[in-house]
Amino acid sequence: MRAALLGSVIAVVLVGAARADATIVVQHGMAGLDLRMTKAQVRAKLGSPTKVRTGKNEFGRYTEFVYPRVTVLFQSGSRATAFRTFSRTERTSRGVGVGSSEAQVLAKVAAVKCSTESGFRHCYVGRSLPGRVITDFQIRKGRVTSIVVGFVVD
Image: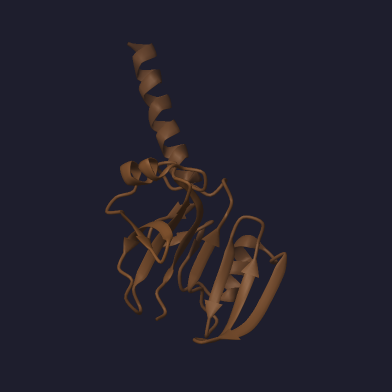
């Protein structure tokens, strides 16, 4: 009886630990960050970025904070509008990340759809409409190569 109870407690602790390690939260954030966080909040959470890029595109001025595992985009303001990772370390609570197969994405990401557009394969959650949030798993040769969680700008 005691062994069974101990086994149950360990299983519960391990499940909790897996969720705590999840760094990609579909439709919300990545690396412990949430969309709409300010630059100061991002720095408080991750420290100083390894590189800061600024520029202007068709949507206005932008700033990117580049960290080893994630890039944070601030499009036309001081709040995070998107996160992108190429790191195999960043994973969803169900273990999906860079290197996962398209089949794993389909099996483990709720409400995901996959398609090929302009020759590029991707799986996504959300709708590609201005102001909406989308989580995009870019696929090449059947595997995830990068993941973006962010607002649709255009």
